[in-house]
Length: 243
Image 1 (cartoon, rainbow, N blue to C red):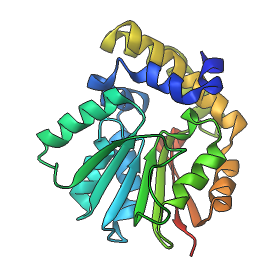
Image 2: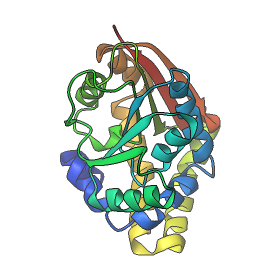
Image 3: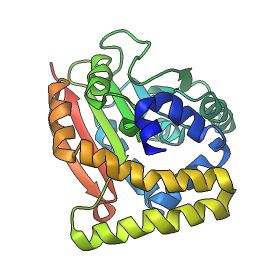
Image 4: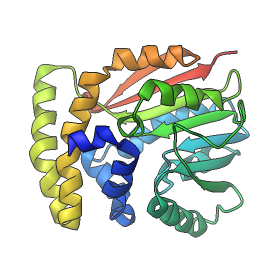
């Protein structure tokens, strides 16, 4: 499964998450041990101070972050995701929240954005880099559509550095998470739960956080900052598009 995820990551992500949109947000809550809302707010806080008028939210999923951006800014937000199923449920969530005038949703890939250079005042992306073929190229493409000086912020799962915490994280992701997935949604959720821990571990073996920060800088993003979340289980990275 891990090998398939790297051979064709976009297609793999579509197939993996296609059965799950109706309870996708619950998976994030389980994997983060209930911390995902705090993680998302930490990412959004890196954006709101610039008072953007137009924000791009990449890998928007069911629009959890997209709606929070609408709640904490006065901007219009464009949400982009590669999954038809996620976009469909996201549209329903936007309508339910009466945010159709503030949020537009687009089907597309983070590595090939259908927007001109320097279109957006700010950009967020969530749990994206494990599902692209070339994370460095994806970061360059994300930076391309942001105006000079505009903030960019991301949220990703992470592997704790400290040995004891890393062992606890490993046991949780390999045993508790697949079991919780099965109890929450049967075989499809068990499959996702079984995949995520090894996927996260493999990603950081190939692309450690230090590598990722340097890739941000090479993509044209300055003042890159890292915030470790929940004893290392998550990481918020943020920066600004170079002038």
